[in-house]
Image (tube, rainbow, N blue to C red; front, top):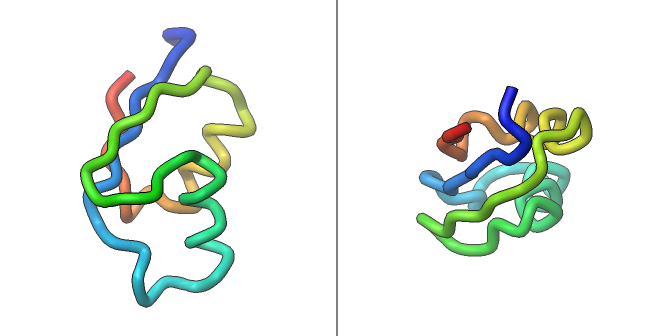
Length: 59
């Protein structure tokens, strides 16, 4: 497993629950097609699992 993970938001959080939107903000995803790089930790993996239908992941 690599030590970093790249996440891109590909769908909008509009219409999602407050928890889903808060998870996107917690990851640092605030706009469509914004790409971020985070450490590959269990905490980040759990957040990604919550919003997997809104993001694209590259390892």
